[in-house]
Image 1 (cartoon, rainbow, N blue to C red):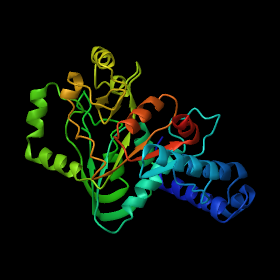
Image 2 (image 1 turned 180 degrees about the vertical axis):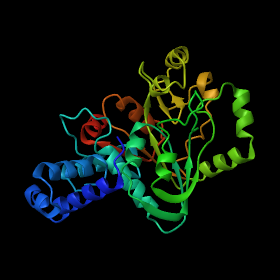
Image 3 (image 1 turned 90 degrees about the horizontal axis):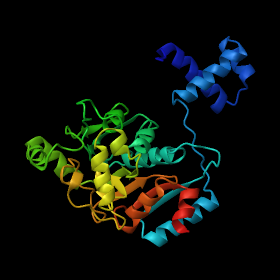
Length: 313
């Protein structure tokens, strides 16, 4: 449902009266000249449309302890652990919001930066939480192809969503996520425009990625980028996780051949030159996070308490 501007204006005003000015719903109703039920609906609309962003400005001791332990155990340069809601079934709750704040911290830096962005559900949820930011000094580059198998824009590619909110120079990757052959990938990567984007990705100052599974419900398979046979071949070769389309085994090593010889994504930037931050949480992501840590693929992690405890257990 598309909400018109006037309705959103009323919702924003109601939310401001409630969250900032501390009014009750009865007081909001009186000030806006609506019923109490309408005032309640306006506040709810503001929340559902993402007009309200909550930031708890207090370091929770348990989360700080877990963050420190993860940094020391895995040699991370950055780690943030958010609280866990035991009753939530969300795969992004808390982590998406924390990732959005971290992306914003980098975007608000005054010195020009190259920011590389991966793909996936968690990053998509994070980018939807971003505030509107003017930062023309930065360049934002996509690590992965933006084209789905049917030729449409890949739904979980986040660069186009991010471009709606952030005023910076954007460099999408106008390629399929996985090419049809090694020869096609080589031809595509040889194009001057694509070469420029790949070179820019390799020079990223900070990189944000998600962690994908290679189980029977792997996102690469469910989203139509690889076939069931290709997924089975990756699993048989020891593939357990994927990051921006690249499949890795249990030691964090690239799987040889199969779909990896056709992945059109840029390589994950080196930890030596880029702060590579992964955002992931939950039991299904746990093996992939362990692999990314063990293989030295990432230097930063945003996760939740339960996942952090499992990583340290």
